[in-house]
Image 1: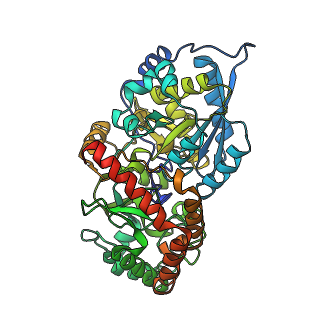
Image 2 (image 1 turned 120 degrees about the horizontal axis):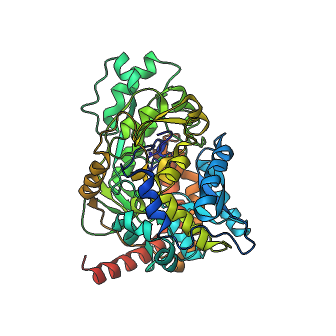
Image 3 (image 1 turned 180 degrees about the vertical axis):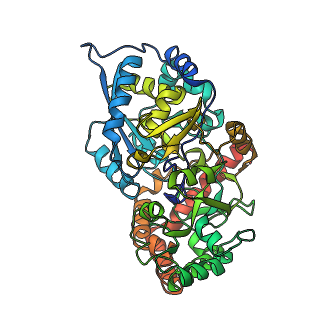
Length: 508
């Protein structure tokens, strides 16, 4: 959500989402166990840890992951490969695909049979459940038992239990924040400069006087930053992330609805359009794939992000100026937050055992985890304590989204993080409230053609509506009509049938 340390971000909800863009979380810190604990966890639980392939050569793993491509990725992976070659007989080639392009490009690459071993997947990018059911990922149950015992020891059990698809695991979730809580993030430079108070900022509407001040006094600053993946908060639990089928969080009737037809979203879109017309939102918001340039330059005032404990410290460390936040939603545990960040093994991987050994090492060995996360010690960062780090100027060339790589609870802390950081994380995870459909995964097989048609309609209307670019009085009825023509009511009926059966089977 740490270098770009995106928290899940924004990703999630918004990608960068979360507007993430906005942010998300990062480079954080670890556990005092240090590399000795990592050696123990990885060395004794991953099978033939020094093995190469039959020819005696190291196995080369191809790893596709999400995030703005970084200048020093190849340089860092060379160091990673030296370490993993010695530990488990593998080298690693990482291929990064930018946030807004990841899903589409991965669909093409997987369909074409492009060689790959490990790939990032989630509820919001390169959909985990759908691609597991399509056969893109290898079933991991046996591999986890044989080569992933370290993962099972360190990962909160709720992640593996909650990320099963039709009874099986197809991805390794990141051990990170479990609930999803959205926050308004602020560039504190402008809060201080104009003495703006955020104590009472908790809704979209309450932002207005602050946005107005920034628009009037800072013409070169974007008051409300976002990209095309932006989704404003409304109290609904989406059956498929960022698709319109949803169940209310405020009611317990488990009724599946088209969120576009709800009064909550209509009111929110009206406010967004009002802000767009006032110039608070960039004219390119509906088409831009990332707001990272604004964040790097500090030319933004607020955005919407998904948080985690001490996220403000991470964001501030990443951007080089102070960032603060205030809650925009309660902390709910959704399917998409449980599945907010996973590493899957390709169904076509020629080295699944080695891929699982690598993922086991990545999740248990602080040396490897922090190298992947923060780069080369002495080049991109320096250690200032056993588990504390500080970014060096070269970190700008290796600014990675921490939450996408696995167990964040062995990443190094920043100087502003307390010693009990990971205990606070565990308390935060325990505090989350389960969303109504947690554990329910909609099977769209019977309505696949309708879902494809609905996705096409979404591509036509969603970004422009959610970013306030178009007038909802004119375009919302058009979108609703097209969604109905595409078959959304049939999808909702099938989802309701499955949800009712799931409730009956689980005593909900």
